[in-house]
Image (cartoon, rainbow, N blue to C red; front, side, top):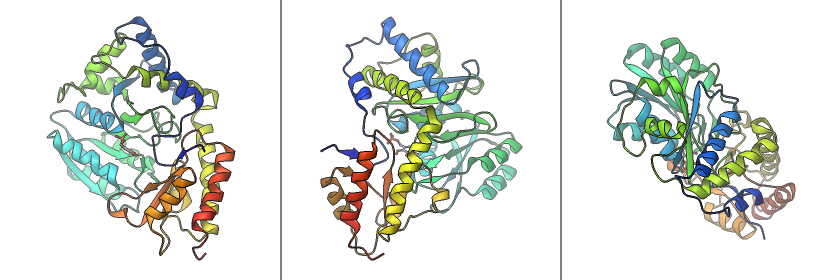
Length: 362
Ligand SMILES: Cc1ncc(COP(=O)(O)O)c(C=O)c1O
């Protein structure tokens, strides 16, 4: 039986991506590696049609958090202040990262089930002229909310501050407005909407933003050093070569399948089918569908239904779902639509949900 991962990454791999892992061994100081790295870096910019004169993609070996930490520690100047707009676990994590690096940090915290509180961001920007950057999570995977970043971007624009975005669970499947939002950088990973394997993450940064500050807060996560090396075809440290092969194949597949809008359409239709099934079984979504990303939805555990039993029942039928996190840990479960999921897999999932949840009162 095929095991389908419905957790928010890593995802179920396609045969093409899995086979790429078996390519020949390669030293990261050889020209073939430079070619591979160049292909991935170009591919990542092409996801949103970005020009290489203005933008750079920077590849790291590490999970999504490594990319977020590299972005925050490399881009907030030593004299700068970061305001974090938080509404979930991953916003909280950005604040923790900034604090660990000794960055002057403020937070505009809103309810986890609500959107970003733009009014309090705006008020903070008015009263704290020292703020240089606002950080936010695009898709807050804690609840499945796709944060509406346009009003936040407008507030940042008005106050002349730049945005640092965690797009770990949205890059490749949701709209990111690189033209109108004052984005300095966004951080993401290979193993979510791009369908690569875990091990490679990346930052897409405005070249001018990186050129402006060399913060040198860390040795290993110094984006400036990665950029200089990667622009020259090299790498400051050993990269996870096999995961690079896989990401290159995943990007080729991504473009063959029609790019981010096609991926969003596919995820949306999977989520709609799952949500209809849930509603028919009396299982309520945590958020209104319009507030949710295409990537993941959270559902309230029905009364009397324990997460572990639901997880184990579905796993025995070939599907791995995901628990809630933080203060939502005991009340919800989450289902992602990423990865190589066919129509037949989806049909089996709907049957499995019927079988595991049908005893709930609609
Ligand atoms: C929005 C967001 N940011 C950051 C992360 C952290 O990524 P990782 O576990 O790859 O470090 C995740 C993981 O799910 C995420 O969803």
